[in-house]
Image (cartoon, rainbow, N blue to C red; front, side, top):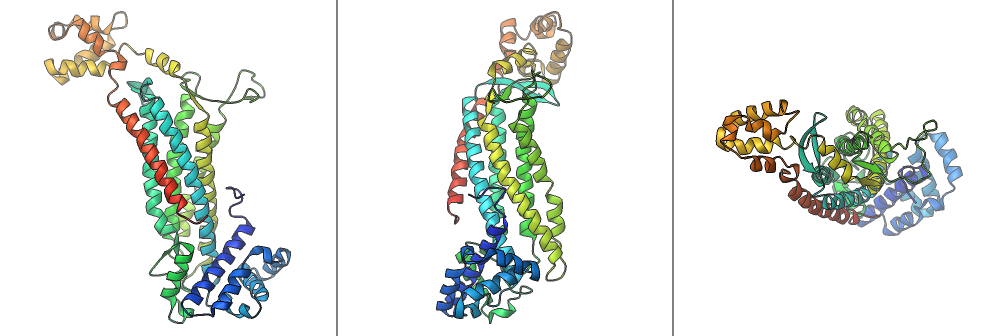
Length: 444
């Protein structure tokens, strides 16, 4: 079973390099560069199980060129067909293409986990479309809204992230297979046809200039993953804040055996969300290295290639892990509507004052209404806001007590929170379905 920790293991890398060698041979036979019988034999033998991996390790240690050692070993076990192995290929073509296949496998698993996380967010948005809570700006209570509305913002941001992934995929999963410097010198004038045939077999996008130094697609992908880390970090940080004792609007569902502190018996700390937040930050940090790696010299630069390879590997694995952590965190989130109601009550008498202000604005003007209501809020500690306002003859002549008190009920002033939450639940379902459909279309 491949995991985020094992996807780029040596064995997986070696096998994908063999997969690329096989695809190249079959594509070359398809366009008449090598005999079909030779290509069939190469493809048949290009399985790591056919190799003595201990002997291969020793060879790689000696050559310090893994593809050279792999090609020699493959040639040896292919008999007469071995003379057609790696026909016109170059090390970087094989290594970068094989690694890209693993990046796509990681990307596919990440998307599947993301789809499940979005499903959970859709459920939360729908279930809590009408769960009233306080909205906060600058860490202060602002206006009443619903928890479903808060979740809706997370859903739409992840939907935008999916659009970014969709746009980036065609550029990152592209075949750069042009020989030593990218101009396809060794492919007998059939380089373009060969690239098209290999790309079709590996389900990659062919490019006009299959060089070794155009790394912008990979850098863009790492940046896209970092934006994913930003969004997930925002969701995780918000949940983390809402778990504070003083707020207590959400919590993690943890088993009774879970220990929060080795010294404070009363402590049960959040577990899932803290890993989510820290992993997201780690993923975001990969951008700088990717941008540095994207500036190689001339027509080939091993230093840039190595930096990009290590960066895209670690970023891909982190993104997969992050998507799974998001799924797990959301699956263990418990919403406390009673705490939300309690916190709303702290300023329940004034939190909908904007509603009252706007109703008064129709009668006495917006600026006057704002100043009158603001003054009343500041001076209504001992009396109700309605009582304070009614002392003002300008207000008393414009609105009665019953209308004022109705306007100040928080649940009467939710804006479009409920409708937005319901629509976001539908968006979540559509986005998750689209993600799964796209993922299933790729080879496993």
